[in-house]
Structure formats: structure tokens, C-alpha cells
Image 1 (cartoon, rainbow, N blue to C red):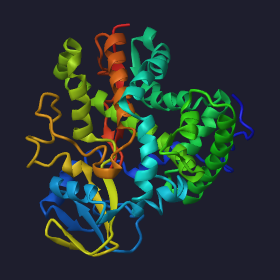
Image 2 (cartoon, helix red, strand yellow):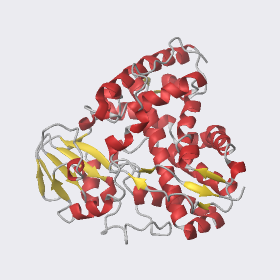
Image 3 (tube, helix red, strand yellow):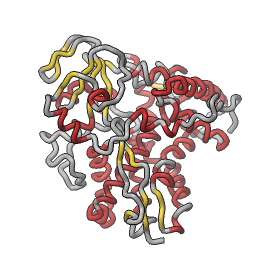
Amino acid sequence: MTTPLRIEEFDDTAYDPFTSDEVNFGDDLDPYPRIHALRAGGAVIPGSYREHMGYPCFYGDGPKFTVLGSSEAEEVLTDASRFSNSGYRPTLGTTFGMGSISTLDNPEHGRWRRIFQKIFLPQYVRTWGTTIVDPVVDGLMARFLPRGSADLVEEFTQRYPFEVIYHQLDLPASDVHTFQRLAIGQTDYVHMAQAQEAGVKLGHYFRALIDARRAEPGEDLVSLLATTEVDGEHLPEIVLVSFLRQLMNAAGDTTYRGTSVLLTALLRNPDQLAAIRADRSLIPAAIEEALRWDGPVLSQLRVAIQDTVVGGVHIPAGASLDVLAGAANRDPDVYKDPDRFDIFRDRRPHFSFSRGPHICVGQHLAKVEMTRALHAVLDKLPGLRLDPQRPAPEIRGMMMRVPAHIHVLFDA
């Protein structure tokens, strides 16, 4: 496959988007004690979550609130008549594009989301598990299997969801390195000039790619998105390009983080890992518990459309609300001993994929990728355990959570 336009690198080739994580999303080892302390002040409190945690806020100078209670989070995320996704426009809208479904409200959001949902239905996504996900996982693991040791982040979880996306998009291998640099750079809002540059250059690339796939459609995701219609409507180019810009971050980055957290939790709890090894039917429960216990995205943003009240607190129109999934997922009124990772706990729905009309359209793909990854770990890494001679994994971040390393040993 060739495109009429080659992908363009950052003007400043010395810029490293992979170092932006800590600056943008924090390096807090354990934000949950602070989150619990904030919840003691009420289910809804004044001020943004970032500011409460000692970080700058990107949402402007208007009134801000943090939503910490689970029922209040449910209310804000599901009531689109009172709360808008427009708060993402200065960040995601600037780099992904104003056609991003994360920035749209109804009726536009519902109209275009139907097309994405049609493509990401579970019955279609499951077929990608064997045709795309498994070969990627097997190829990555083959590089370290003979050693009997690995860094599961650097050598596996950080790579495989992105390589899945490259295969889904059918990108030429020569474009992959620059593509990932641009995709990650889009969310470096501390360096907004580079974030905007990344969005512009990916936009040029995807428009050329869409034209090529419409002329000669294949089985790849770009071809499907470019040719699928619902009720006689195709996706407008602005919406399609915005979605493709966002795909790397929404599908790749969060899956890498979620899988890394899952493996860290199981390695810290070898009795639960052993239980899953003995009974693979526990894998779905383990994935859901990892997403609840330390979901990859702790906060979601909404804006009040009108003057309203949430949790007994007056919210003026135009106010920004940080809906803290990390707090709702560890609400002691909902989850017994919420800070404990326990795959055997009674299942309750979590907030890590959001709720309501903006619930993550790619959640089924994320779960397929996490499931396939865990099966591969169980099949190919017998005797898997943390390497006692290397630093233990530390899950860090205030907004986005992930360990930098997972050093393990296994029986080669």
C-alpha cells in the first residue's frame, strides 16, 4: 500500500513526545489517599482535580468543580441535557479536530457515533483477535521468550496495542515510527505548539490515506470507516480524520496502560494469578477489576449547559466538572475495601470507560486486546514472577496511570 503523501516528521526532530507523560499527567505514585481526603469534603467540591493535586489546569478561568461520588458521577456522565463534552474542545478539539466525537454533543454526536458503533460491534471486534491481535502478540513475545526474563512494559505492553492499530490501518512499515511520534505528541498540551503541529501533519496524512482507500478499498479499518454508512450517510471527512487522529491515543495508549496495570496487579497478587492460571474463566473478572482498581484514565471532563445542582452543590452554567472515575471506582459506599485488588469481589459496573452517550466506543476492542495478552502471558511464560533483583513495578500518574517497567522472570 502506498499513499500520495508521505508522513511528515516534527520540524524539531529533537523533540521527544515520549517524555511528555510525566509533565502532562503527573508521576504520583498513589493519588488515592488524596482522592479519599477530597471525598471527605463532599461528593462535589469546588476546584479542578488537577489544581487539587498541585498541577496546572487547562480549562480556562471559569468556575470549576470536582465530582467524587459515584452516584453524582453517574448523574453528570449520563445527563447530556445538562452536561456537555465541549470542555474538551480547547485540548482534544485543537489537536484531534473539532470533528472528534469526544468533543461533540447531540445531535451530531449520536449521528456519527452510530457508524463507529457499527464497525466496533463485539462480533466484528472478536474476529480481529485471531487475525490481528494474536499475530502481533506472538511476534513481540518471540523476541524475549528464549531469555527467561523481560521488561513486560518496554518489550510488550507498550508496543502491542499500537502495532495492532498499525495492522488495522494497514500502514506501511516505513511510516510507523513517525506516525507513533505524531500520535503521542498530539496530547502533549504542555507543549501546545508541537501538539498542534502533530494534529496538522496527521490530518494531511489521513486525508491522503482516505482518498487512497476510497479509490481501492481493502479490509482495513480506514477502508471500513470510509465506506460504511448508516441510513444512507457516510462520515464527513472532518469527523473521520478526527477519529483517526484520536485512535492511537484512545485505543492504543489506554490499552497499553490498562494491560500494564492488570499485569502489575496480578504479579503483586500471585495467589490471584495462580487462580487465573488454573481457571481461565476468571480472566474477564480480572480485567474488570483491574479497570476498576486503577483504571488508565482517572478523570473525565464535562461542562454545565445550564445552572443546575449536583450532590447538593450549585453548579453555574459554563462551569467545568472533573468527573473523577478514579474516585467513583473506589467509592467505599459501593465497593467493600475499595483500595484492594480482588478479582473475586462482587462485580459492580466501573467508570473507566465512562457512562452514558460518550461511553467508550472502543471498549470491546480494548477488552479483546487485554484478554488476548493475558492468555498469551499464561500460555507462553510459565512460572512468571517479578524479578527480585530489579525494581518492583510502580504505577504512577495523577490523570493517566501506568508503570514504567515490569521486570519479570519466567521459565524459558
